[in-house]
Amino acid sequence: MLLAHIQESLVEELRRRVRNGESTERALAKLTGISQPHMHNVLKGQRLLSGELADAILQRLQLSILDLIDRKELVAFLNRNSNLEARAVAVPILEGLLGPGYPLPRQVPSPEIYTVPHEHAVTATQPVVARLAADPAMAEVFSEGDLILLDQSETLRTYLQPHGYYVVNTPSGAFVRALRREGNELLLLTGATRDQASPSTDRVPLESVDLLRLVLARVIWLNRTRRWDDLPASG
Image (cartoon, rainbow, N blue to C red; front, side, top):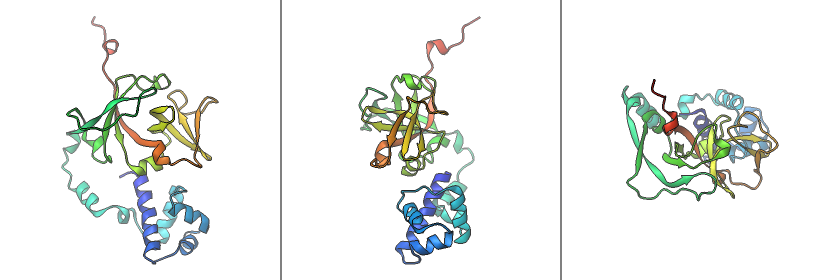
């Protein structure tokens, strides 16, 4: 359970109260001390819910984080065996390479699978593994043939984390980039510009873009392929 999941669960609780007639957008805005247009945009998913605002809403609605966690998910977590973290999970591999100049890999029936550490896959939504093509802009992060585990959660693709890597689907192809919102634009950052955008940084205007069609998955694990030149020389 990530912070983004908690935030989305809180927004869904607010939506439920409005749908059931327990409250109104106006009443929620007044209770939480924000404007009604801001509350409207939060409920529509057009504005992000900041951590500070989420804390204020929890306090004023007399809710705790435990109230927002699905009961079955909580019980499953508490009952998990202590050695589960050492287990591996079989995840399907997408057909094709992911990177510039290649068609978007597809998930098709295939006997090819890859085992990944349990702790990385257990909370992922529709986890899949992709094999990466060469991408000069990301050479500092990965190389051709490396494997990545992808989480297709809509929550993770909406509440973007500043230090995360994502699969973005652009007119020039699908590839991995770090993402950052800046005003009404989404910055596609490479390995060299992850911490500092440059004049050459690709920018996507968000006004007319469906974010979930642009951001396809979040990278949650990378397995570097062992190469000949990675091996230590024998003495």
